[in-house]
Image 1 (spheres, rainbow, N blue to C red):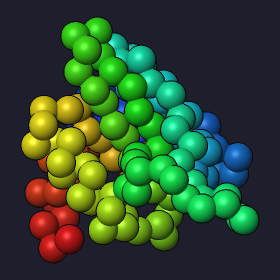
Image 2: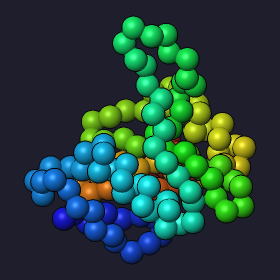
Image 3: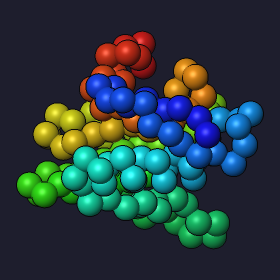
Image 4: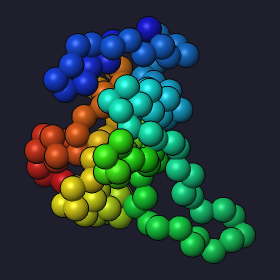
Length: 130
C-alpha cells in the first residue's frame, strides 16, 4: 500500500497493484470516487472520449468524474496519472466550473508516489505557471 494525502486531512492508504510503481489511472479514479463519496458527493466516472470511426460529439475538456452534492452543487474531478498533462480544454473547463461555484478537484500522483486529491483552486495556486 502507499500513503496518500489530501490537503487538510490525515493520510489515507491506497492499495496499488505494485508497491514499486505509481497508482494507475484506474486506481486513482477509484480513490477519487471513494474520497468524494466520503465528502458527501454522489459521483461517477464519465466516459467522454473519441471512438475510432465516429465523430467526437462530447464536450471537450469534460472531467473524468462528475456528480453533485446533497445541496445540488455540481462536482467535477480530473484524474491524471503519472506523466499525464492537462489539456487546454481541461484547464478551461475546470476554471469555468470553479468560477461558477462548482466543487472542482484534481486527483493525481503525489510527490511521494501515492494518490493525492486536492481542490482545483489549490492546484492552480501551486502550479501558477500553467
